[in-house]
Image (tube, rainbow, N blue to C red; front, side, top):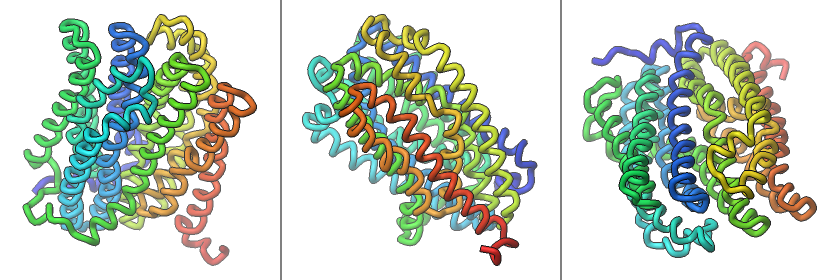
Length: 453
């Protein structure tokens, strides 16, 4: 029987434990983000700025399908963390087996539908004019690898839930490194253009899948599966879905946001504005990697200790995670306020794009120092299995605030209104999250104060 590595989640000092969980997660996210960043630099310099816009059109579609795997992974991993905390290994095994079955069924189905409706999906997401053909080329090839990506996203969260953050980090690093190597071969050496960029991404997903599969087959995890665990269990599926819908909804709203932004910016500023958004979007993925890493490291610690009814440790984890994430977010903020033009020039030499992007980047990241509270607050409710609150807080920023703002503000401010919508939505969502998190801490993490409330 595998050693109970997850037990340390309930006994080690919180500060040390959070660093132990967050650093590998941050490094994994960093390498993955660098992959996206450098991939965009390669594409922009070796193919052209239109290719950057074309990839940005495809991203929301592939992200949404891959998000099915992430949603099932995060939802199931919350259950697994709490089950291990309560020493219920059979529930953990059943959950993981059901995660694999659900991820495979959903991602394959979505890929089939995505390929069937390719001619209508790509234009809808902003693939117009000169962007259309390269976007279709990239879209079709990348979809072939999305089921592998979905299984990787699911498996990675489980690896972290069982207390193996370093293995999860390697799983995120492998496809990133392989994608960059394949980019060089397929785009620069073989001159395959957009098809080369797409095949590099697809094959990198396969590399990641093989690594994660090898981890679980070699029984390094304390969750060992039998055939019976793959059969769908209604109660387990419902619980996974209720929590996974939070992550899926977040990714769905991101896809909707890309769709709306690409179309609104194309109307207001043409292809250069879509390219500017693509560059800023890459920085959103890359620059905040340490903050996202803290949030990822926070999830299994909070879930395990909540399942073990160690509420003082849960509260300490919340405060420590917010403190660490806020400090890191402030450092990111300063860097991006000082060097936006230098960053833009890494991606393209297009004069119009260089003119537009720095100001947009400053607006988009203007409220970065306060987002730690919003991220950790929403993650907390998901970690402890409170799906409704997690869903509400996750959707509040983009669904409740950002999307209405990008329709209202441009009427008065033009394209500037689109960029100003970002910090306003961040501030409003953080205020809402802070209110609900405060109430939750007082009511459920301070049992001695319940009578007062």
